[in-house]
Image (cartoon, rainbow, N blue to C red; front, side, top):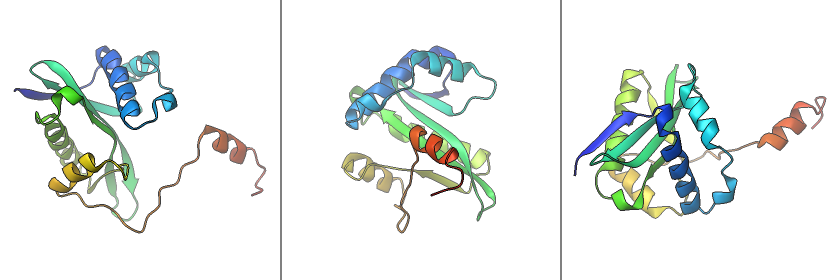
Length: 163
């Protein structure tokens, strides 16, 4: 099998949207997907897109994707590459697409002078956890991830400084 990695373009919006829905279904959260095909197409066409994305192909068929962006580490004083989602379709698992995507991303991290490459994984996703351990990644301890959704953002932003 021939695995290749390339940057996503606006022409990949349909495949990317389909895979995002497949990933959400796998993570038991399909109803949480709000991004539309039009959103992705517009964002991928933007001169300043909110994310970068790599597409994996196996024998010229779209097999998976890695969607990522940059954060900044105040302690390191450098960019951090943050992997939002890594997904390989069932039919292409064990074909090397996931490995090729991670190798591509570590190359991007080095090129962009990132001292960190981070991501999150669901605690029940043993297959992914084993894969990441094989790559030499280690889980972080002592940190709990927090999130405000759009409703909480709006409520707090207009709360007149009261908590």
